[in-house]
Length: 448
Ligand code: PHE
Image (cartoon, rainbow, N blue to C red; front, side, top):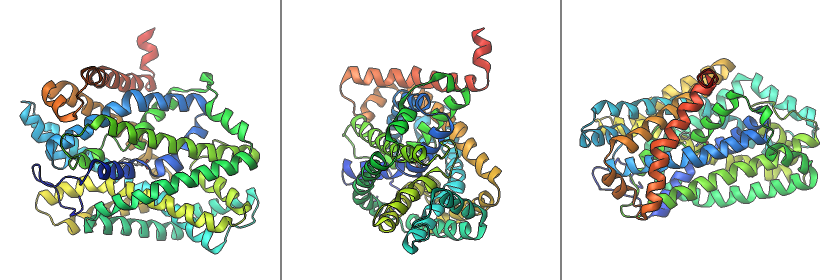
């Protein structure tokens, strides 16, 4: 994708499978892992929530992810047109293409809060560089974050910077360059998280943190928690809105999608778990509330940085890494829409800046209203993405022809293919529907 142009049938493909892995990992690993996973784990009570999330990654996320890459590769174009094309090929209504369109809208809606949070990360780069929170105690660090939330000007500044950088990268079509950046970024981020986990093990209440994350107390698991865990499985793997499908269009022919997806999902999950293991020991050692919400990362990690030697240097670097991880995700939030508009005759820079402009305006609304922020987050993550995933599973599992699917996934082992297809046809759709019904309270009523 180095040229940034939309591939027409079988033209541009990723130089190698590795490049696809980097770009897809870049999309998957982001604020979802480092900011969101720890704070929702805190809000929804820890271990049992983590277990449901892991189960959703395995039973729903991975099968759907393979399907998305497969559809993208089979269609070799933007998600909306890929779905239309494959629907026609399977004698199904071309309205399936609407799924791609809804996905583009979901991507923009996610961007409307994502770039605000990425802006917070940028603010913390600047605060670390200037040493703003150095040697403050936990209470002062908490109120430091609250004062950021109270300052719409500072949030607007960084939200705008982040939106502009995202738009510039997408407009230039240098997403291939991002793949290379990810190559360096991921090992660094990984190393940093390990370092922070080490710090927390020594200076935090490591055992309380681990117990919180891994002791499964199912009495704390509400039906809302189950819905949020499933929604997050989609969010963190960038599924259900076409991001991974758009990248799948560049996946080289003949190599197997299965192992690639497993690698990405494993990496994504490990990074999220490490982020949690870095934060919760500090929560318990400093008498913070695990369920304090979206500020969790911006309170716990500054506590660590403010106390360690060279902390402001490490803090600057860490928040910069988080911002870049957010950038490699945000480009994939608007890329499907841009690819579609470009294909329909609108020049890439114009389509990029229009879509990014809409997302930027939405971001301003999220800055000024916590309610709008929450609605955008909850509606996209917990409803739109799983719904998109459900339809993708039905499309790849029931509508597309079996042989075409087998050929396109490149999974040559018959038994592995059968297991995947079973998960896609039955486990994922029924799981998603059951969780939806459960959270509506209908499941209890049906079971009675
Ligand atoms: N997966 C990204 C993250 O965890 C967010 C994302 C969601 C990106 C959906 C693209 C599509 O931060």
